[in-house]
Length: 395
Ligand SMILES: Cc1cc2nc3c(=O)[nH]c(=O)nc-3n(C[C@H](O)[C@H](O)[C@H](O)COP(=O)(O)OP(=O)(O)OC[C@H]3O[C@@H](n4cnc5c(N)ncnc54)[C@H](O)[C@@H]3O)c2cc1C
Image (cartoon, rainbow, N blue to C red; front, top):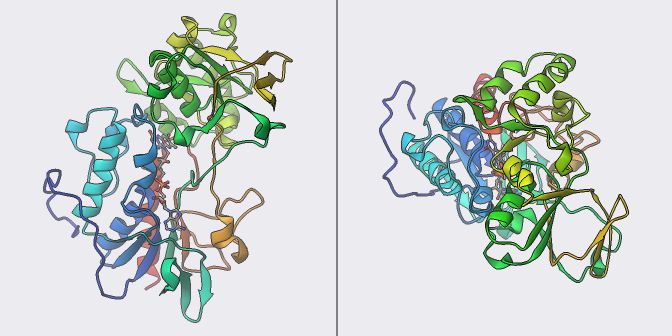
């Protein structure tokens, strides 16, 4: 979009992904919200980036999420640079509308997106970066933005006896809806936002019994209170000291969420913001509290091991579920791509992200690899503008 250009409503336009033949000024790896917003911000600065996407279409991660998923951050706080999310998508934007928004976004900003191209590695070249990709081609550019996603590789813990399990074991990334699981005994493992919502979906969708294995009792927040979204509070407190937010949070939690100890889900002992710093975002309540209180979702201890049909929990109890849904998170999986460049820390996170390049890797940027309390769409939008400014300054 040209600076100051009026914002037409492109929402009726058909999605389109194109590639131009001109040499790109920057290569962006990944056509999710992080990559698309970085590319749009670079376009806004007059640069011509090329987005490389391994999937056949933009927004691949969102296309794969479960059916009932909505953004838990409100529409107005989740728009990417240059194009707000259309009002008609409602306050809490449904998964399919997030996908439509990302399609519209690429179209509106006239982004060059090359789909079906997987980048194997980022390598130092003679005058910048070289990216060996699908089909033996090597793309080169002095600027590379890595936006391959916080949730690249589904992760299932290596529980003892996992391979002996005779029931079905599914990672949450493969779960769509409860249809196939009517009447079944299900154990959902992990009580992040995904595990919490999938357990509710299963209970409402007709599963025979739903248990939810909890390792650390989560912080639970209402998505909004009297119209005020939890994300707005999160944005306000994000710069406050961790200890202060940890001390204040229990007061808010006590007035907004009932005590579920009697149902097997005690209040957390760990500080809310300390947990965020460790990567655990609070659970936004989209039905878990009611489902636990009505005992349609039963919290249980965390999983210790599998043994044939049996799942043994850390408190010694046993069960024989038909299905185990592992809502046990993802890994960034950056090692094969950039591990050899000495730009990752001991936990596999980029040493710097946003507008800063690692000192030993000028022109290499990372976006979308933090998990801030203030909402990732919002932070990716902020980072996109900063990255574009930083890149423009170096030219
Ligand atoms: C279930 C769920 C709900 C969420 N809800 C919210 C929410 O409500 N609000 C919010 O702000 N955030 C939310 N997030 C967090 C975050 O906003 C999303 O995960 C978002 O999709 C991250 O965007 P991204 O572009 O960084 O990664 P992705 O959307 O995962 O996009 C990365 C892209 O890179 C491609 N790719 C990966 N490797 C390569 C390669 N080697 N070569 C080429 N292409 C590659 C992938 O195919 C993918 O299309 C949610 C996350 C999850 C998992």
